[in-house]
Length: 271
Length: 332
Image 1 (cartoon, one colour):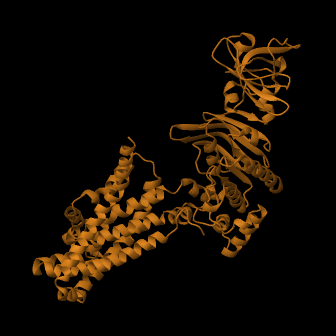
Image 2 (image 1 turned 90 degrees about the vertical axis):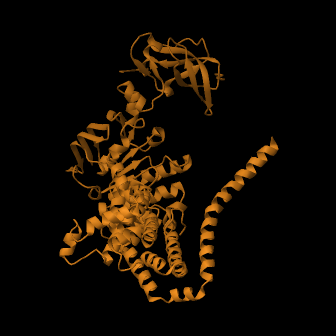
Image 3 (image 1 turned 60 degrees about the vertical axis):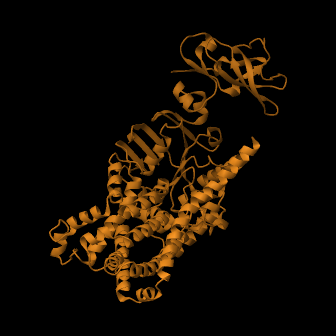
């Protein structure tokens, strides 16, 4: 019996690290395979590293993703706060609506964005009247990235606000803070960690977006569109080289953003 | 200071109805009652965090029904203090001052002064997570008072503290109240401890005030069983146990019950009930005895005090004797 119990304990102790290692191993294997493939053609890698088209695509992608996340933070933060604080029967409907881009094929997300923002679309037409065009234009890329990023940001921010006890805001009110000040001085700083985490995830999602973007704006080329065109025109070797450059840049930015998020306030932090 | 008349406050299915509640300036009023009676909701309504559907709320003689919380001049302290965890103790205390227009330096100086007043200026730079329960409680009260609030609403602020810290904090609060002329409305379940420094008790049950008055008077003159239960009074006995009547209940204050050996002849105008000792707590010169009464119905507990001459081991037969004058009839 004792031997069986020891065996069960050892097996349970090994199971957790084993489960964790499988996914990490999968990711590392994918990176190693890409690296090995790129190493077979160093000139292509060198060419990709200095290719102005690649850096232009990276610049456009990062700028559009940054703008999409900024807009998400601007409009998504109040939505997330209200979702966290509201006890309404219609809340599940709102939650389902927010999560809709998660379950839609991204081509359909792109189709919805296109229908909304095309020249004679319900939003595209009025914006067009003030000179803002979305079809095959930078704003179209931002719109597509914004659309697919909604659940990533709003869900994370809502979880952050839900963790802030409502009593803290009530005390702030009795101390002289209006609703806005109680939100800005108490709820927002305490949910900032989750908001930033959601912003990083939404940014990552936006940078990697392809299907939704090409439905409304094939040009200017974002990095995912560039890789697709190079793959169809020149084959695997050049695509691998661009992928390595993109991985290096995105990986660095992602690590920096995650470290910034981790440095934000924690409830158990000591001064 | 505070007057509520004909107030109806609804949260979901629960309705709190206050026919009349008045708290005088400088008074320390306790709100007691079972969980779910509406005590905390009453505090939230006074703080302006919940708006009454109907009725009048007067603060300092002025209609406060539409006054937002930030303009009510009240301090609110919850059971878990609700200190802002991302701010230091000093920043917590300065929060209200800054919200009311004080500059950064002015706010810090005033916050330091009030922390000094409460003897916790040494905690100024520390975050709430690093403070003990008693320290957090002091900082929370300092924060509530920093804005010059003259009405303090306390929602079980001492419940999470150990007994000695609780007693010290209660004493400090009583001193502050006296020195600053504060009015205090406190929700508590520890009636015995809180009553030492309080002037009045308001008993709530199922969203209504069922008794209101000085504690001494209430404990010997509760109007009905519901109020007595909400007040947590002991020795509530069906009338059948005392005089054989079928209906009604009686209350006898435990301090007026003498526990003695079985077969004790009743003194003049006294009542004697027989019972079996369940527990006995030695308090030095006397023992506090909990016994099970002999009687016609279900098991009824009874509490009294036995002198050193009476042996009260659990399971022993005893009598509980008390004056007829100390028996109070309660309406159901």
